[in-house]
Image 1 (cartoon, chains in turn yellow, blue):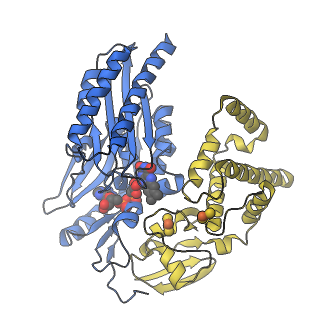
Image 2 (cartoon, helix red, strand yellow):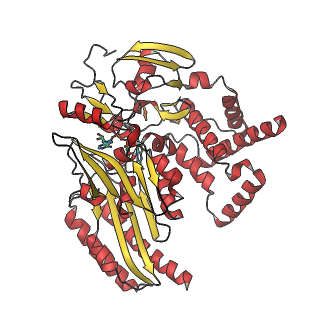
Image 3 (cartoon, each protein chain N blue to C red):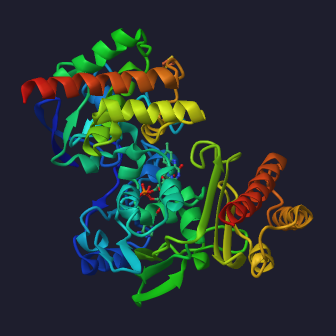
Length: 185
Length: 294
Ligand SMILES: Cc1cc2nc3c(=O)[nH]c(=O)nc-3n(C[C@H](O)[C@H](O)[C@H](O)COP(=O)(O)OP(=O)(O)OC[C@H]3O[C@@H](n4cnc5c(N)ncnc54)[C@H](O)[C@@H]3O)c2cc1C
Ligand code: FES
Ligand code: FES
C-alpha cells in the first residue's frame, strides 16, 4: 500500500506491505541509526519513537497506521532543547543509559516528563514535592510520581540504570524546565 | 525487503453499515483495534498467508463515551488510558490505582477496551478488573443475520476461563456501574503479557453493610490459562461478619485452592501458591479495615 508520512521532518511517500512494522521500515528502508533490532515479542522496549508527539513502541505500529502520521525518532529528537535537558540531567546525576537502550529510555523519559508536567503533579512545585517526598521517605514508600516514573521506564527491559537514578533524572529535568519557565515569565 | 510478498488488505470502515458489509463478504477478516496484542503475539511479518484486516480506527461511533451519575458506557475503541483518565469520577481510589497498574501509559494509550477484552492466548489484567466490577458488554454479531445484544462480561468466557467469542462478534460498548464505596483489592505478580505463564492477577471487590459482607466478586487471572471467577468464594463470603476468625480464613483459602486446582489442572504450583496468598491477604485486609473503622 502507499503511505505518506513525515519522519524526522522529512515527507516520505513510499509503497510498503500494510502490516510491516514501523520499526522494520525504519531499520530496513530508512536505515535510521538509533533503531537497533526487532525483538519479536520479547518486549525489549528498545524501539520507542514519538508518533504524533506520543511515545509508542514502533514494533507494534503496522504500516497502515502511518498514513498522515508525524514520526520523530531519536535522530531528530537529539537536536531539540528537550533532549539537551535530559542529557544534562544524565550528566548531573552521573548516570547514562547504555548504547543499546539510550534512545528509547531518553524518549520514554521525555514522555514521562510531559505527562507529569501536564498533570501539574507536585513535581512542578519543588517545595510541595520535597514535603511529599520527605513524608514518603519516612514511611518507606514511594510517591505516586516516583511510582509512575518507575513503571513507565520499566517498559524498557534493560537494567543498566537503577530506578532511583531514573527518578532523579526525571525530577532534575523537570526542575531545569521549571526554572527556565520562571526566568522567562 | 519482502515487498513482493502478498500483503494484508486493510479495510477501514467509518460506519457500522460499511463494517457489516465488508465482514459479510470477508468473514475471515480480523478486527484490528490498537494492534498491541496482534502485533506482539499474532501477526508475524512477513507472513506467508496475510490476513484481511478490518481496522476499527475510523469508527467514531466506537469511541463515544456516555455517562451519568450512576454509570458510564465506553465505546469499545476507547483506549485503556481514556478509562483510567476518567475513572476517578466513578470509582474508588483503589479501583483507579488498579486501572493505573495495567501496564504503562505508553501501552494504555495504544490498547483499547475491545482489544483488551478479546485477546486470545492471554487474559489481560484489565479484563480481570472489569470482571469484578460486574461490567456488561454490547456485542454485535456481524454475520448473515446481524444482531445486537448486551451480555454480562462473565459470559464471554467458558468455565475454564477461555474466551468464547465467535470471530463475527464485534464488541461495541462496555457498561460499568459507578462504585466508590466497596472495598477493592488488586494484586498481580509478573506481567500478564510478558510473563503470562507465571503471572497471577487477582482482583476482588466486596460490599459491606456495617460489618457484614453483602456481596463479593473475586476474579483470578492465570493469563495463559484462563480466568477464574470463584462462585464458591463469592457465595461462602456473602453474609460473613467481619472480622473473620483466622481458622475460617484458612478454611476458605483451602477451599479456593481445591477449586482452582480442579478447574485448571495445568496451573503451575507457584501460581496456585500465589493465588492462595493473595486471597488470604485480602481476607486479612478486610479484617483490618473493619477493625480500623471500629
Ligand atoms: C509490553 C506490553 C505489556 C502489557 N501489559 C499489560 C498489562 O499489564 N495489563 C493489561 O491489561 N494489558 C497489558 N497489555 C495490553 C494487552 O496485553 C493487549 O495487548 C491489549 O489490551 C490489546 O488491545 P488492542 O486494542 O491493542 O487490541 P488488538 O491487538 O488490536 O486486538 C486484540 C484482539 O482483540 C480483537 N478485537 C479488538 N477489538 C475488538 C472488538 N471491538 N470486538 C471484537 N474483537 C476485537 C482482535 O481481533 C484481536 O484478536 C500489554 C501490552 C504490551 C505490548
Ligand atoms: S523491538 Fe522489542 S519491544 Fe519493540
Ligand atoms: S540495553 Fe541497556 S544495558 Fe542492556
